[in-house]
Length: 311
Image 1 (cartoon, rainbow, N blue to C red):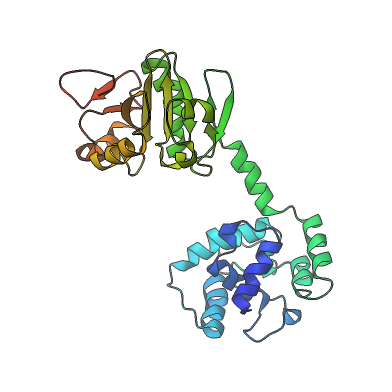
Image 2 (image 1 turned 180 degrees about the vertical axis):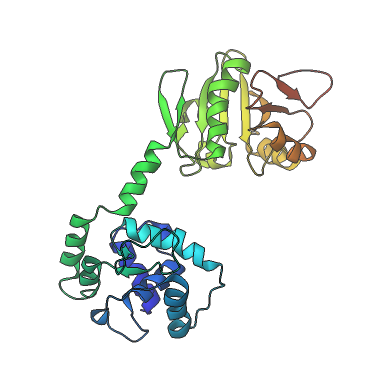
């Protein structure tokens, strides 16, 4: 295994999030440990490094990996800050009272991390990792707790609350369920709700099967599916924050996929705001509907002879 791969393996076992197990993080870690390509990890040493003349120079000279000068900020903000939070490095250990943004700012591997790393691949490695984690809460767990706190709650008509992963796309999906449905699909029930991290967050398999939707392939469904049983109307809704409105191509795909569906189909594209709508307006298919979360009481009907309803 290469030293880069070994460094990534160590970072993973020490509990770093996936974003801090990438190549630049691993090279930074090697520099902080002063490990050369043929060194054993038992030879790791503690030495303070600045970012440009220390870490980046070490990587270039010993691993022939030359980063652009502006990579300095990426290393500082996306690697070293997280390493410090995880207890892997110490900031300005040689001169603790340095002012913020001092050109003499430096980082060094913590003593506990150093003691742990030196035991990599030895019989005592697992025990060393356990000791490190006992003294430093895993950063991945800390980040996961923060992420859980930031999740987007969605209250269904039944009173059940789902929690979507944070992000603009899921905020639009939450608005569809809570705002669009209450105004334009009253009495309907949610059959499907995807999530950027969990495509099958909510699926009413029995109802989908009853109206002829092949649920074994439900990943082909749009972001939100709502059903009005009294009217037998199926609302197929795409939440758009960057791409993917109800285009002619998408309609053809969905029509083929839903060819055995017995419900009348209503195609809707939902946008967070009017600006996003204007970016995609030329791609939206005729005979579909548009809803904008910032203007929740209004609909835009891409047809001249009728309003909401199956085509």
